[in-house]
Length: 199
Image (cartoon, rainbow, N blue to C red; front, side):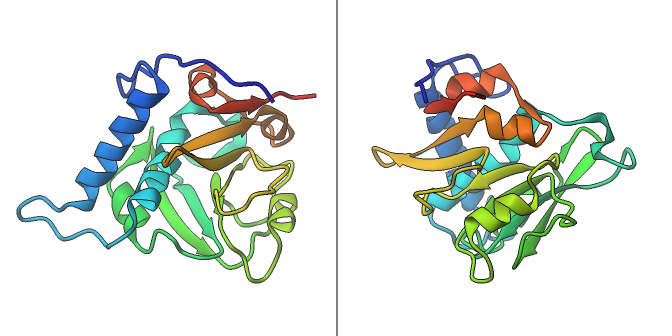
């Protein structure tokens, strides 16, 4: 594992990881506070508001295989497996958003299976299987696996949230990404706290 330096992230205009985190925090805070005439967002901790924001912001920086979607308007599915730390916040956050022509859709899963049909799966505390079993269920499939910071050991996850100095950061495993036939854009790798290189 080796630390990576900061890189440019044009879509947010961020020049360092600290700037990115500040912008994401601001975005999450703004989304948590309803504007006049808007329906109130569900209550959720700032930590999980930031994690929810990261989940759909990661999508444009992943290169998906051409056969990932069966049709141009098939939803881009973000699945939340296990506990629901976001409540309905994530669903509200992605409402009206899309990745290209693919509208974001949020699904809840009790168990991760090979036919879950997720493009991103966030794995929190699971009652019906271990984190490792959940990761193995989608191993080899074009799924970006994201493991919560509450799971200290999650070998095989592509993205692992970590808390550093009170901030949400992430570690990326490019070997795990390669096994799932996806690649991570170098701009996102440059913003990771650390990158596990493919062996």
